[in-house]
Amino acid sequence: MSTIYQATASAPVNIAVIKYWGKRDTKLILPTNSSLSVTLDQDHLRSTTTSRADPSFERDQLWLNGKEDEIKPGSRLETCITEMKRLRKEYEDQNPNEPKAISLLISSYKVHIASYNNFPTAAGLASSASGFAALVASLAQLYNLPASPSTLSLIARQGSGSACRSLFGGFVAWQMGSDPSGSDSLAVQVAPQEHWPQMHALICVVSDDKKGTSSTSGMQRTVETSTLLQHRIKDVVPWRMEKISKAILERDFDTFARITMADSNQFHAVALDTEPPIFYMNDVSRAIIALIVEYNRLSVEAGKGYKAAYTYDAGPNAVIYALEENIKEIVQLIVSYFPQKPGEFKDVWGIFGESAA
Ligand code: 2P0
Image: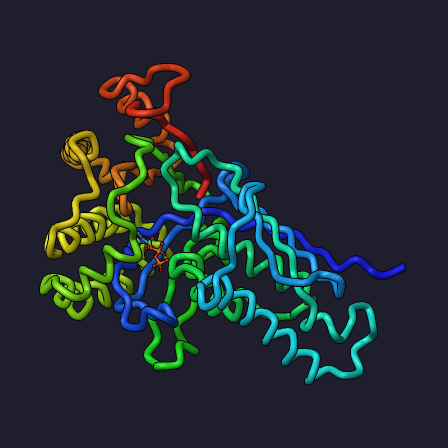
């Protein structure tokens, strides 16, 4: 009887507060700026992936939510699988006397991989970040690799840039690095979730329409045509990364909120500065911004500081970061301005998740 080599791992979605938008190397997925995100530690916002290696498998195969997805030669998927096999091979070569708990030939076996997202596509959340992070984590487990999350982030990054940040929980920076090989373009944890457990994220579904311009092609067009992006990557993101990291370490919500909203605004400004222009937010997204701005203005006037921070990715849905003590009030505020129709998701203002970050 042969041994079954199989492992399952899961990874959550992350939402950036300093946005990644632009690549300096499209093959290796090296970004034009560093970014920072919060990993949403919620059971129902995850990808779970099972990998199995077997000498009888004839080719590598992948199933996404139960449907087979082709692994195209030269694709990001193929790159990630190949890179993980290479890591395993390296490990085998360096540890020839390892106890035989696992075949020393496993890196030569074909793999079958099945991945599931437990969040509905109606949530409007990109699944590539959690998906590639779970894929890499499950292969690392299958191969019994002692690799750190930062080392694995180097490989997840080549699946989808934002995926490298989902290998850590809590507050995570993706350092852009400077080496042309990509060896220093990796994720590091700024602080674990327990450092600031009061931080919550509300995901507000404005629309579940598939976005018009994919992140991959949109950001490339921005790199090629936007002059504002050059200002952003040289003069703005470096100090924002420092300042927001410090704000997180000091649990300074005011600074965290101001930088988060400013960076979301600037990301959408560089999208607009692209030729042809890219619009990700819609009228409802902008109405939510106006509501949060007014809510914060009244709170600051009352001497209570900022209470909420909006941020938008490559789509119209809002994510609102707030401290736990204010979540109830914010939910009531949003529901009173954007009533939800029970049971309907499309074109409804749905609060999908309230998550401890
Ligand atoms: C982010 N986004 O930092 C930014 C903010 C969207 C807006 O990362 O081409 O899907 O696979 O590296 O990772 C979306 O970009 O793009 C993204 P690829 P990805 O979260």
